[in-house]
Length: 500
Image 1 (cartoon, rainbow, N blue to C red):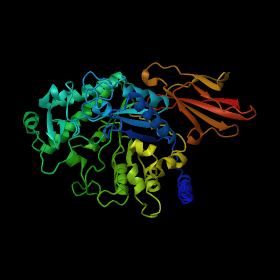
Image 2 (cartoon, helix red, strand yellow):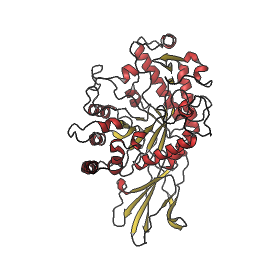
Image 3 (cartoon, rainbow, N blue to C red):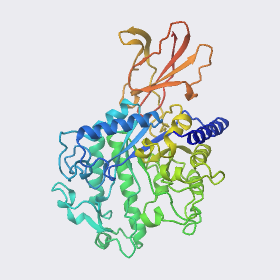
Image 4 (spheres, rainbow, N blue to C red):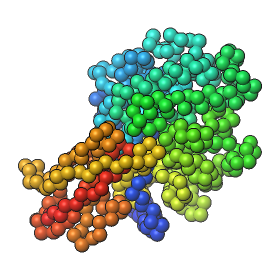
């Protein structure tokens, strides 16, 4: 690294450190997600072993950068990056839709195991309506279009389920139930694709479904919004019925409505969820039909049409009925100069907003590979400052607020692998009470045990043991172990004094 570049980077780190410490913005609980997509073709046609190695490498790097949740795209066009009896293997995996991985493996199952091993959540990301992208020239016989072509329409060079048909909702809910029932996912996730993005000069061809299932609506827009509302509500109910601890989250386009369309909208001038995509996100949040919301605020601070500062404040004020995280565009952030100090990028300013505004409990990074590549030193700054201590994922008290019982039999033991702190899982009567992860804290012998200080977290693990850093047995430390359930409720602490 050149001396000048090193100086600039170190100066940025020092400045960021001062800002973070001054504002005490190192939360113990924060959603720190990253999207791993398939539609960019990064996996297409890769041998199974090479893709596994790529994913493991990405997860190791993301873990080091403090990421605690992975949103992994597993269904892009009525296809699957997992074993499905309803839909074909994705061409974004094997190179041709319907082709089985060779040698055989299941990417979703693999990612669940690898994420949980690292203390991360795995959110299965599906696209509900899209059935064929522009690059897919041949559909597998197993594709649902070949069984029920009447449920689909073509628009803008792609194909979609027609949201107007009840059968479309029923089918999508069947897919969700299949994933949730067979896989140990932590959440089902949908991004911003509901009704298709508008194409100039082209009308959505839903006259037939509107005539048949109009339900008395006179306004086509209101009817389309109600179709999507019904799907969101039914998916939420499907997940709750199947596994009540699995969350359902959405990541909508970053503008709900512009002020010119609605006095309560944001002071922006861009595409609108409500009017253009027929996605009434605030209704879903306020009715509790989603368990978290990640609006994609991908613009820079100062953007004339959609100012990041304006939008993050708007969402913080209007979307507090459910956990709110912010969708961040890493490349745009590091490429845009700070308005007050053009010599640095907008990462510090965006973190000040994210952590300084009420109701915002974290963020999700678009996209994971850019973080791994360390574009604009984004990953280094996460590691050294904003994510320099681990964070627990925020709780979901509207689903469950009961903490698991304490761990048992905490004891250090010498083994052939070294000095190991062991404990036993607490007893649990139901799956919701079960401990699935553990937090290990370490304190100096004369320090107060403050479990709200994340600087004392040394591990978040699914194991019931932790390898101790033994030196000479002359220094006392207090170790504390707590249990986390599936929704990250934390048990009472069990302490153990150990000489290391």
